[in-house]
Image (cartoon, rainbow, N blue to C red):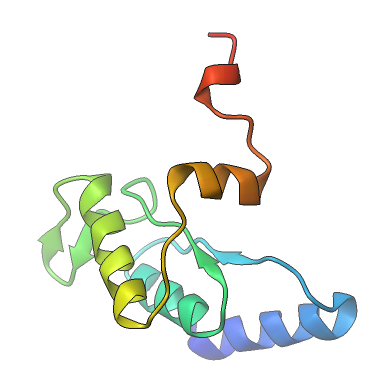
Length: 102
């Protein structure tokens, strides 16, 4: 995976369908680089231990929260305010835990 791949896929989709909501969900050692590229291009991101055990090179993340905190900090430094859980549910069209029957 390369940053050029992200650019190519984004540009191809934009020329085919116009404006759209998009996200990067990358797995493995390039996860944060791909997520950073998405943020810089106006996309959304998703991180988690199920995709990458590391929070940085050579250091295993203690939790999903540590990865979320890292990408939220990076977004903040770029002037991007991360969505709250309720805002994310609305953006993604999810019904929320209070409306699940289990």
